[in-house]
Length: 194
Image (cartoon, rainbow, N blue to C red; front, side, top):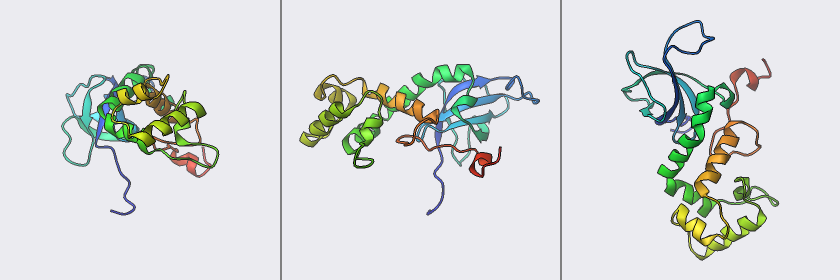
């Protein structure tokens, strides 16, 4: 449907607080999640009696959910718990590796941002020389896997790690461009109110 916002279907638990946040007035379990599609950070309330574990995959789509009662809100990177932040790199890397074909296609299809910058340069550790090597290799033959990228591009770091690092940078909200996430602007910030 045109204009309908796409939502996450599945998410991975990065932290589970059985009695909720310590500063909250209500004592209810809270799960902090990251979506598998756009790496959306969310807080959710599990169904009664459900205990969730970090790295557990849960359904959060519109159909009947088995473990999640409701999605409370979208959160920022800074609203994650310390434990949630420490789990994040491993969880994102797992998502990236599970969706390897999708992210290999990023290397195969990425284009320029403007006349001076290429979107591949947004990945940490990729400068002009690496970008030129990637473009040359993909013009000869499209990449088939992360392993293929590292074998064909000289001194290439682990592509999954580069993507993970970029996703975390985007979640922190420090960049101008977003390759993998949707920028999050809190409602009150959209209108200049605090």
